[in-house]
Length: 177
Image 1 (cartoon, helix red, strand yellow):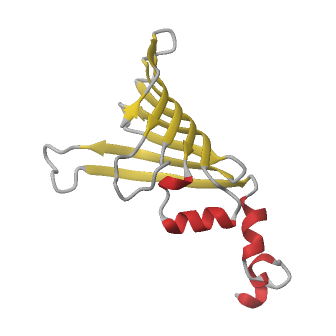
Image 2 (cartoon, rainbow, N blue to C red; image 1 turned 30 degrees about the vertical axis):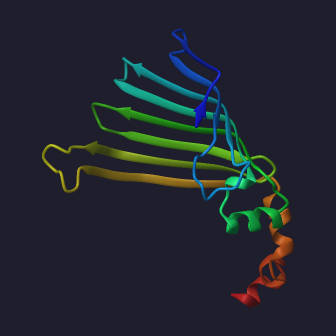
C-alpha cells in the first residue's frame, strides 16, 4: 500500500515532487509495524542547450525505514551499533549526459543520520546504449574514473567497540596483517 499527500510541478525549477509518501509492504512474512516513510521524492530534468547536455536529478528526502522491515540479520547489526530505525536525510542521484561526445557522469550521494555519508562519483568518457543493433550487450562504455567516499558520522565509534583490538588499535593492526 502506497499513499502520498501531494504532487506538485514547479515550472520555474523544472521540478516534479511527490510529498509525504508512506509505504506499507504487503508481505505476509513481515511483522506488523513495517513501514517506510519518504518526506519527498523529486525529479528534475534540465537541458543545457549551449552544451547539449541533459541533467537528470532524482532525490529522496527524509527517508525512514522501520526496524520491523529489516531482515533478522540487519536488525541484529543495527541493534549492536545502537540504531533502531534507518533514517536517511537525503539520497540524491545526478546523471549528466553530453550528447555530442556521449560523456557521462553519475553522482550518488546519501547518508544515514549519525552513521555515515557516502558519495559515489562515476565518470565515463563515453557511454552509449544501443539495443537495436547490440541486443546481447547494448551498453558501450569507456570508464574514466570512479571514486567512493565514506565520511564517518558516528558509525566507527559504534563498530570499533565490537571489533577485535587487532583491527581497531593502530598499534596492533600491523601484526594482524
